[in-house]
Image (cartoon, rainbow over all chains, first blue to last red; front, side, top):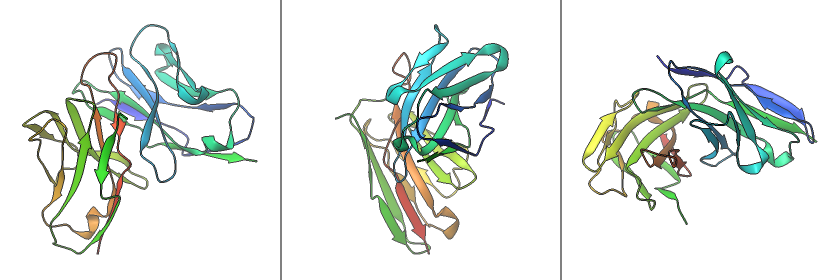
Length: 112
Length: 114
């Protein structure tokens, strides 16, 4: 069955530091991949998505992600985090049954 | 503004008292879905609908009902709520095909059943 793994439940980085959140997926064909962000008390917001083409995709709020088929990964990156980036981040994949499967999420904490 | 609107945002109810959480989208999306979010369990799909009058069970449908009589609305019905249905609920919608695929989520409904 298709699945998404986010190995890190919590990550803490200092404001201004770079960020990488990991995501690994299990899917036989070329996947549709997504990253969402959930700020406290809010719904999920789509940051970026990959369907095909260029494996480095740019999203909103200065985020980018790179699809690496050989590693079954779709890691999210940002060169310099801001305190407002503190939130929970979800990776997701569209599976064969046309359902979006979400990872368990990574909560990002920012140190001042 | 393109959005998914859920109501109410917060709800406290008693065991067994029927309730409905409404969801409406203004983007002409074909696909709508309900999720519940619980600590440590992530997002779990309750029901989804691929178009008007077409609904199907997700991963955790027990105790819930839905209907899709109009394209824009997808209400979630709890006929006899129980305390294990205390959770944060999200409605989401998307176009089903093409480059615009990707959920738009509502702001959530925090339900407490006592």
